[in-house]
Image (tube, rainbow, N blue to C red; front, side, top):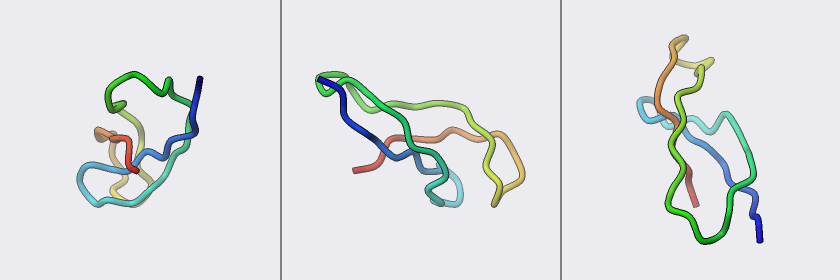
Amino acid sequence: MRKKVVLACGECGSRNYSTMNNKDSERLELKKYCKTCSNHTIHRETK
């Protein structure tokens, strides 16, 4: 089963991206571009 998750910037905390993730897996971490920081940062899955 897949669920929709929201990714938030690790530095400023703004929620920029949404994606799908498996329900059983651990929290997702991706390196994405943040418009607020104007930099590539780690984005983590939020609840």
